[in-house]
Length: 212
Ligand code: CO
Image 1 (cartoon, rainbow, N blue to C red):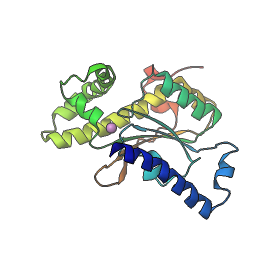
Image 2 (image 1 turned 90 degrees about the vertical axis):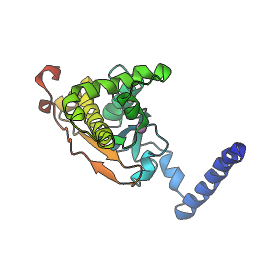
Image 3 (image 1 turned 30 degrees about the vertical axis):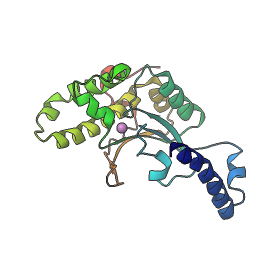
């Protein structure tokens, strides 16, 4: 069964190529020359949240970084490399942190369960809980508290992006760069814009502002 599914993926690819070429014979040829995506997407690794598909974006339109619970951890070389390349080479104009309701990583952070090495990653999400403990603890309904935690986690990751030297440097050079926070509804398909539109350094707490 599993082998069948695996083989099917390759068949799907052939069909997809044929369909794309049917619509536009130069579809792949045009992509060969390079990319100029206007958007960097930082999303969860969750299989139900495929970046391009849920926003109707084509190949070449979104630069993507995904990890468990869409985190912006400032010591994560993978994230920093993606961000640096997107901002300084590709010159994306938007960075979207997209979380999702029902996120397993966020859920894990609400519990005391140990999941092994990932506990160290989840701990960053637990810090978000601690920052917003008063608000979260005041929500009696566990499902509602979980939803709010997902939203607050996205907002924190957006501000963690703003705290990076990469983003502050771009703003310092008057480069247009807007940071956004979204939450995707796995059960509805709908994206909620949290409207945390960071677009300049003075929106940050003074202690995080860098002088270059
Ligand atoms: Co998730």
